[in-house]
Image (spheres, rainbow, N blue to C red):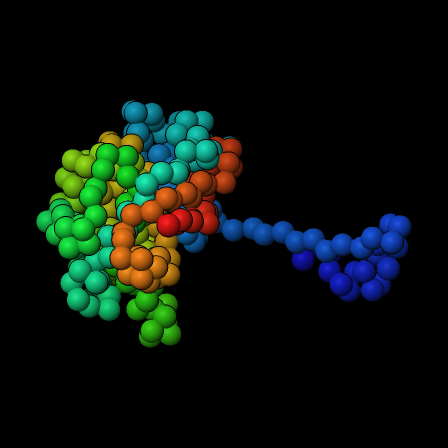
Length: 240
């Protein structure tokens, strides 16, 4: 808090006529919660999306591919693929890799058509798991269910605009590519220019989709227009 009730009681604002106020501030890593990765977030052999080099991200931020460039653009048709419901389990276990075939089968089971430009949300149920177990455990950078490298075919084939999951890194961990860390980030973020989101709490959306008996909706999740940032927290909204 920058100004609170104690400040008012002690007379710190007595120079003001009648009105009193409270104020606050926050400082946080931009990728510490529900967030989008900017295209400047990941490099492959010294290059980010569109071949820009390391010199484009300095201590003053990213001069290209920063998150503010999409601050007015993350809006469109959203689709939830609820993988635990598809597999008949409360949540996927750590190390469970979701494949192209799994994504196709889940969409078919949910009777939802995947279209070019969709924003696809993938629920693994890991947030439901940590809540049920009352322990965040290794949710931060530890083993997790998630997308396997094979899923790259599904996202590119369907021309998906953005994807997000409820885990910290979107991809299955341990990764299914020995010798390459987070391969989907390299394929989709660096090469395909596809926006990736992480730590999306999809539990309420899962319940709403089941109740509505539909898995597509109007979706919006614009990042904060933080100049030269390589990620941003968001407050996503799904509207039926």
